[in-house]
Length: 174
Image (cartoon, rainbow, N blue to C red; front, side, top):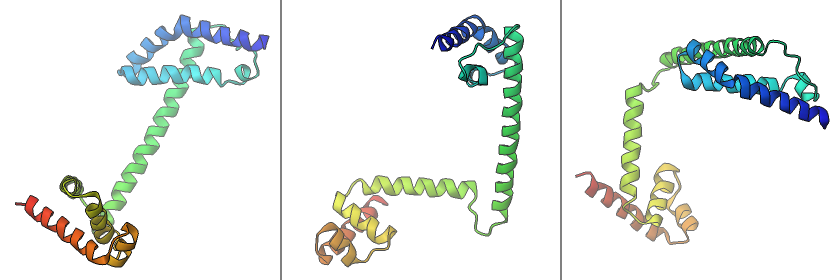
């Protein structure tokens, strides 16, 4: 317990005395405050997760700024490698998607999203039961009888709900 409090105190002092300096160093290197804050935080998390800290032993640090910059540089290298792998993966996905017949273009995807948003807005204008009947029948492919059982109404009532929704959609499209 005493060893743990010594490590906590050491890390607290290190953070208090050098965090602002490390953040500024990273901000100048990265050109982005947000990324600098993330890497500075990751640097101190790495110290917390070090073997010495986990064993409750003080971390042997003679030159705190050199130690912090070395740790931060290693994190930057890890981050750059991870971003490179992510970019390569996304490029490979994009290349494969181009080869797939019928793969939608970004414009087609946007049109589909806008159409779905419009349908949702139109369906807001009908009762919850009519909306449920419509979605179960037309999107999930349920029969009138299945929808009726699910909603606890007759098949004839399901037909009325569907007609209500279709008429409402037609009146909204004008």
